[in-house]
Image 1 (cartoon, rainbow, N blue to C red):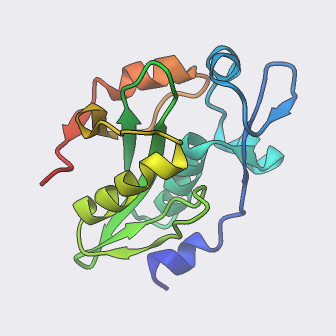
Image 2: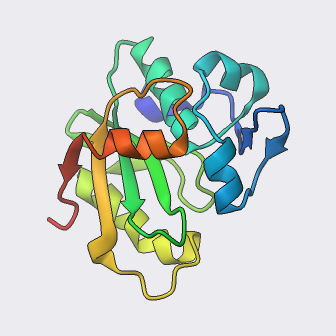
Length: 172
């Protein structure tokens, strides 16, 4: 069974988050998101079937680890104070191929690539459309390889954490 077939065994979760009062938000405004979001545990995500790309990557990480396969996780972060424009992805290197495993994006399905940069560049090319960014400044895009974050981190705490991790040169 290849990694994409394994991925199909993960329950699909809906995109969104629950605030501290248990209310589900699928498209929250920036200020509300920043003051109410925190990373949920795998158990909560499996039970509630709702999460952001951050939780999706962690669910994928747990699933593949249970099959003795390690994934790498990356965040593509657009450093712009006016807008939250970041996306986390799960990537598995297997038999000299790179498997893009994250499933929360609407128009980009999990698939197989020849390199990590091929995946990153495809996603970055979609940023203006995904995040409604006019005149995307590619110098403000950063990619970090990060490891399993602690649960209950706020979005800002998560971003602060990933900025301490290895920055990847996606322009190569």
